[in-house]
Image (tube, rainbow, N blue to C red):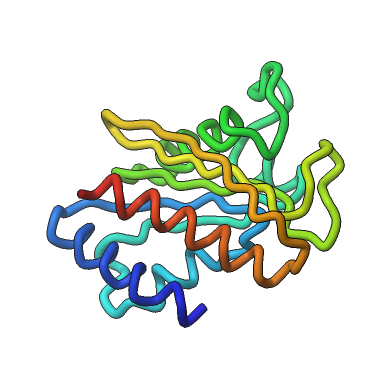
Length: 160
């Protein structure tokens, strides 16, 4: 997580300066995105909350979503990452919603994605972006860190 802290500190400073807030819905990064943002002193000024949306009970219980909300999309895709980002932003009344969904490894996920695959979604008032990262790696912990970094990089870029 140490490699995430400088980026998270910069994001925290920018969010505070702008008077903006963030809400997180992450999956295969396992809470590292939230942990990095919360490690910054003064995080309560910008961090609204988040959850690790790892299994169907979290999808329903924490996000308030069910299969009908997914329409024809599946997990670990860009459209799904945007659904999560929009939903967490709305539920926690945040300026930004940031999500991550993928397959950390050492094997792929049940949807056919290889280990090292993740999709990041970011939703704001006037901006929505989604991005796919393929690391090509099978190391679970390494992919988790790379997934969290990817999500934070996209949030950082949006704040420019």
